[in-house]
Image (cartoon, rainbow over all chains, first blue to last red; front, side):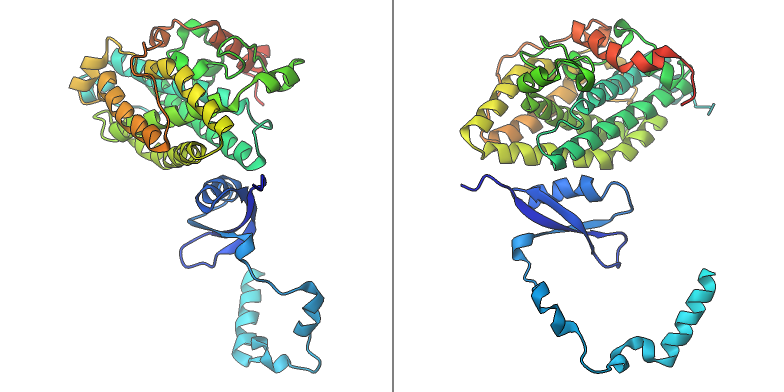
Length: 99
Length: 285
């Protein structure tokens, strides 16, 4: 039997409706234990209303060797929402507030 | 200093009875919190080390809040209560002060981290004793807080309602471990089983009766120790049976702590815990 515990990736939600954000991982034998341990590793320093744990083995990911497939060979900035006038104005207003 | 309605006016129980109760609750939390904190940096795995240390902080927080309540009832300041009292002045049960090293109570655990015998203690020390004690204590504390949430002494009721979220995690932690260790290999099962049998008599001492029990129950401050003990035994033995563990059927409770009669382990703990404060009492850090 494998003596090592599994790795669970931990996702933290700071308020209802906010997205769950990946914050790290824990070692645990199963999901419930992973939740129990994740609560103190990642839920004790900042506001938290919900935690997800996902077995790392359940995650299907792209390879960094294939990172070039995300690169654009031609200009496709028209795909970026920042191109729109309204977004620009909203961004400016936001920046002004921050100052 | 906040003014608090005196327990006598509020509940009909004597101030002395309520003060004794709050000492018992606060001292239990401080001493088990300190004992659990002795594992900080030495826990069996990183994640559990952090979880266990974090619960120790919760417990010390509960002790501090309860000591602050005592201060509003005319007792000395929280720091004085924690750092300047002698063992005989503490009202904690003997269970919370036990040393989890070697044969229970025989190891010298004074300031484990700086102890020259650290390696020896670590080899002899048994985390199963601390883990099982924490499980048994958390179940008792959860039962007490559920009852105290309805207490006729409102300052205590309010505090109990505030603590319950943290303790929900403490019982979750203990129950998950008990259930998982019940399915673990023979070595783990045997250690847990031995810890349950070794700790059980002292665990029953958490509910050592006091002369105030009847008065406090009559005034609606809290249920009697006997009643809390019955509830605790029902809950805990149910969880243990489900996990496939046994417990002593005719254990004699280890008592004395509520009257200030402690074993030498509490004096050793206090010598370590109070050492720095006593170098310069009242100093600002």
